[in-house]
Image (cartoon, rainbow, N blue to C red; front, side, top):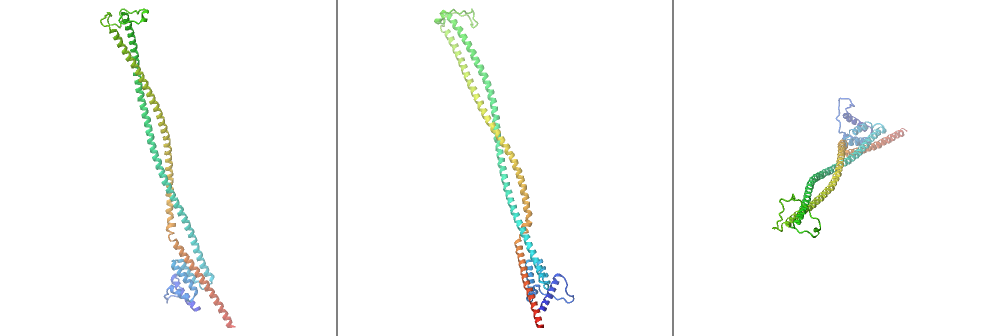
Length: 387
């Protein structure tokens, strides 16, 4: 049993010397080594300790782990030593793998949290940018509409002022003309009344016109010898008895026309002035209303314009924050997305490595126990045989 173990160890040392480049025998007669897998299988069949090395070697090949491969070599080199020394190497490897997995799990958890939080921030900033743009568009549309309404109100006020000025000018001209017409009518009526009175007195004195009964008790009217209104001396002709009444009738009709003209002119003047006053009043009310609306809309326009400036500032800040967050998301990709794409595979491989280490640890523990028991039994047999 001991010779077989020594032979296997020699073969193992040759294989390890070839793999590591360390020469363990004198040159001259090199022996081509067998396959490492075949050697381990043969050695493990003869030595239970080598079964643990085979487990480690196979696990290293499956996981492509150079560290595990180095450990298998170290374990194979220390199989003749105490169990604690070999066990410590395996324990350190297990602790290192567990620590690596813990750090990677913490990194994975941090990455998941950062990616989730950053994505939420990106979505939130994108929604806020969308809302701000919609609000800015709405405010801009409202400002444009208010501008048009203010313009319409100002144009109406300007047109009303111009119309009032024109109407006032027309009213002043009409007032002057009506005043002149009324004055002319009044003057004409006075002149006609005086003429009618003079002619009536003259015709009554001459007998062409009969006096009223009550006129006989009054003193006669004294007329000048040649009145200025007469073109020629009155001859007292009696050939036309209707002439005095005809002239008076014409004068009275003309005076009636002037009286009617005066009344119509006064009535028209009153109507024109009333309409003008109503127009001025209505325009004043409408202008005040439009001016109030214009002032209110101008205030609302300023408020909305200020709000647009504030919203544009918020949009700029939010866009900057979104850009920084997006850059942070890009920076996370190599460490948390590209680098973590094989996280599950690495975790599974590491779990297999730990499982293989524990399995090898168990095999070695049993092997060392068996060796100790054999040594103790052999010693006991030697003592018994000697006795």
